[in-house]
Image: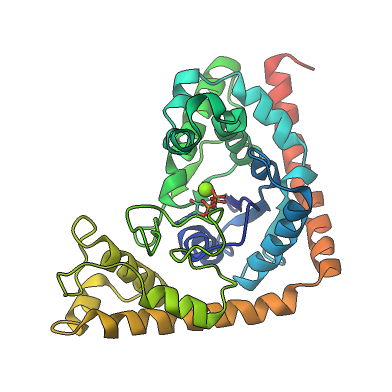
Length: 329
Ligand code: ATP
Ligand code: MG
């Protein structure tokens, strides 16, 4: 019997190169080995305000993008989180297994609440990791491919699964996180100290969106912030901009850092950036062509309906085991 793999993306904006390289690509590369589930995390998207019409179109955009990135509905269950309300119920239950301290220590919460100020921060931002715990546990997930920023949430999932199993008996499978060695934190091209985020302003010069016009994407890469050391070398501390571009190149082509450094010995950043821009634009062109092909609402609705049906079977079964263990039925 195959083990289960699961991942998801929030439909909170247009997908970025970071989402593709950090999560979706790793999922697609493994979708045949596992019993695979990928979802559109629309309940996570409402943890902060999003205009309802925007949310709806972002959901379709996300499904079409999954398909364009190579997710195959014949091999993978593709579903929308809100179609399987067991996520909400198990999330609610898992919140009660969680300590305030555990949620306060989540770096995403710390980072985002700093921006909003503690009093003004949405509760959703505080408790959403417990929904993520439910997302993972509902499907008896063995492996969760995500970017580095989400690793801590999968670790929380393991802690809560273990706590629950100890208290109530073996209900949950222990998931492992998969964070790829290269490309697990693609950084903002203008501020390479920060992660590239999709919910940034859409005209952000530091974010490559998968739907970016190729000329725009090229310009963003050519004007990416670097340093004045003037040699192509992987050193995240002293050369974060160049290291970020090297990660992007390496993750797409498979070439290792040493080989890239060798090829660019004695050469300037301009030539290096041109190659990165070429490789990224080729990738975007391929994805965009497939996106145009799949972007048909009727087809997408059909895929989501089939996906929800399959996902519900497993989710219902896990939730029934959970409520039974709790003494609720
Ligand atoms: P948001 O700003 O809405 O939080 P996001 O770009 O962080 O958007 P998420 O939907 O939160 O995207 O995350 C989807 C997946 O993409 C997760 O597995 C996450 O770890 C991964 N991911 C997000 N940004 C990056 C990045 N810059 N580099 C690598 N992986 C990333
Ligand atoms: Mg995020």
